[in-house]
Length: 448
Length: 166
Image (cartoon, rainbow over all chains, first blue to last red; front, side, top):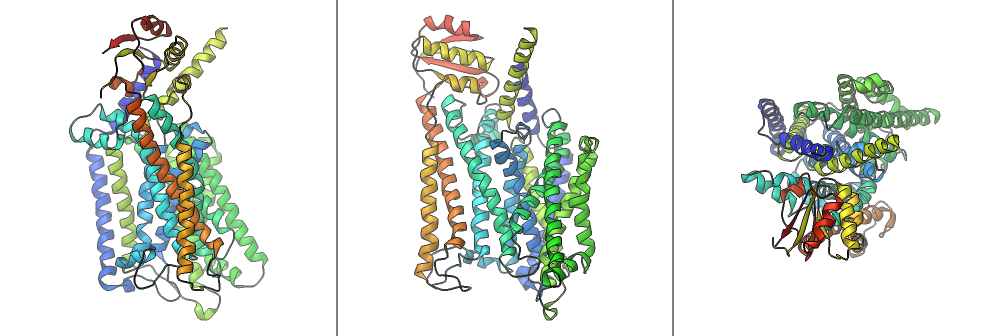
């Protein structure tokens, strides 16, 4: 039997093994995720029943943990598109083994992020007011507001990343469909959309995939730029900065790729995908973490250098307050997680050590959540005049909702792992053929 | 799915399948069809099919999206002329974000729908005898209307299995 056939069969077997009935570990994790989700729903019920008084929000701090969560989850949602679209356009081959899980993370991340502006309203049943629709009250939304841009950006990002995800899934679902029975066969047939693998189908699929990548690349930059403009178009010190969009985009990629690593390390072990998601793949991802961490460190430095250089003023005061005020431990933990921890990735031994890589990725995730908290809260606590200063203490309800968001995210992700192939079967086969051909031509050249 | 009679060859190696497609073309077989588990460039290039028209559909979708975004923002502003924050009623720089997002949204939808329609039409136009191996580990090359004379050509190209289908 040819080496290619053997390799393709092994890829099929690995993908099919991930679809077996879930074990005890999966069930325990799912129960944990659903419990967290339950905590979130219970916590939010207080806001629905009694209003925003159950949060720590006050005047002047009108944005707190819920907006922090929103920005955090949008950031998490960025890596999937980076890995699938941007690396696809650059023909970075290491993306093949990891992009499906990252894409799923994107779709679920946007689903999670999209909840928060609605939750933050306090009266979520009025959320439809943000959408433009003909109404008899002559009320129209303000298209000049970045909050409206956000609605458009997030919903577009959700739609495009979902279509991108489904387009990549079609051939793999077809491969699994033909080898399964019962409800699973019908389930995969739904995602395969009649796929038979003909050359005509591949011709259109390849072209459409390229256009999706071309659309998704500027989209991913626009989405987090819009999130940055939520802050930057205001005149609040610490927010009003032209640095914000690139700074937010690099932070989003950092947190997203760190989350991909955090998820992939346990997944590859639990689902026995070590032969497909290899250490060199994780090594390449950790290099992306290192690069974006350096860009972020540069952004932090330039933000502070300019504020300090400008002399006395609200910008300088607010940024000093951020580093030394009530939440100083948050600031320095953020520096540790986002700037210092990733520096260890310069060492090959650290990049090759999975426990070290996992620890650094988790540190980055914690650091990135704290970064968003620092930006949101410290600027509002320490505005231009002392008359307008205040304090904010997150309440249990807000923390419960944050825990619930993790429960929501992981429930969907665990479901994805058991219902859909977590690696791209078709692209792995294409890679295998390419690699074998390369090896054969090298052997032939060597023999000649 | 019904298909025409012809000759079906099964290949293990994409290069062999590509070679068979080229040889069939050279032997005067104009209609050559193939199915495979992954987009192997050796086979797809040998098919010598023109580029998909999805690009044009996507472009039209994106242009419609840009127009919709423009109409939505400027139209709403003009229908309800209210100056907010000292900005002009029609504030194009601010509206560009909405126009961009709607462009990408409608362009993305037309790309996806175009792909589904293209795949559906392609599947119906180039029907292949069904074989689950073509989604797993083999490449199928089907020559509709071909007779036994093509067997030798396909075997020479490296086919592991050649058979007439009716």
